[in-house]
Amino acid sequence: MQQKVESLLDGLKPIFAMQDKTVEFVSATEDEIVLKLGGFCGGGCGCSDTWIEGLKEMLTAEFPQSKINFI
Image (cartoon, rainbow, N blue to C red; front, side, top):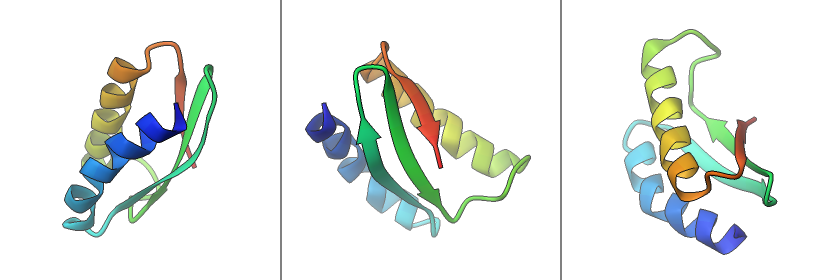
């Protein structure tokens, strides 16, 4: 599972980097995937919310049994 998550993220990292944002794998179990985000607004920013929701949707589609958490 970890390898599959990291592979998915590797394809997205250049896109995030173009906007000075980072996403890093932290951990994955059958129940939860944890990612570390960098370069995102502290909260309530529409643009950051859009990036985060899009990432969450992609991961949920691939891993429907896992809760997606960001730190």
